[in-house]
Length: 221
Image 1 (cartoon, rainbow, N blue to C red):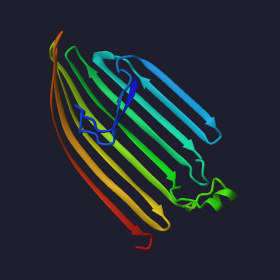
Image 2 (spheres, helix red, strand yellow):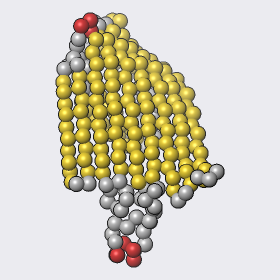
Image 3 (spheres, rainbow, N blue to C red):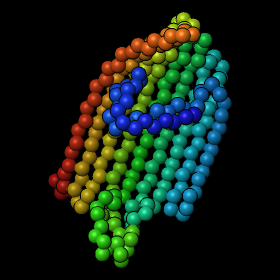
C-alpha cells in the first residue's frame, strides 16, 4: 500500500541497520477484498505487468493474498535486455487479539551484460555499441519466507514476533568464465510496543545468522 526509500545509514526495529540505504514497504491489507491488475507498455522495448488479489476475511478469520509481476526490456545498448519477475504470497489467521501470518516471495532476473566501457570512436559509429558478448548473461533469484505473530495482550501493548529465512543464488558468465554466489540467512525478531496518549515505548531483540559463498570457474574446469 506504500513504499518509502531512505538514503544513507539508518536504524530499523525489524532487522539489521542499513549502510547505503533501506526500502520500507507495506503490502495491501489482507482483510480487505481486492483485485488489482495492471499492464503497462512504455514502448516496444519495455513491458511491465502486475496483479494482486486479496481474499478479505473468510470463515473463522482466515485470509490470503497472492500477487505476481513480470517485466521485459530489450535494453538501450545492443543485446542488453532484461527479463524479471516475482511471486508474492501471504496467508493469515486474524482474531481479536492475535494475527498469525506466513508470507514470502520468490523473485528472479536474467540480464544480458553491458558493463564494459566503449571508446568514443566506436560510439560515433554506433551509439548503442556493446563490447560485451551476446552470451554474457547473469541469472539471479531470491526467496524469502517469514512466519509472523502479532499479539495484543493488553489494549496498549502489542508484541510482534517473526521467524524468517532467505536465500540468494545466482551466477554470471563473462568471456568464458562463470562466477556466482550462494547465500543463506535466517533469523528471529521480537518487538514489544507500548503506546499511551502521551508516551510510546519500543523494545525488541534481533538475532540472525548469515552465510555466503562466492565461486568462479572456467567452462572447461
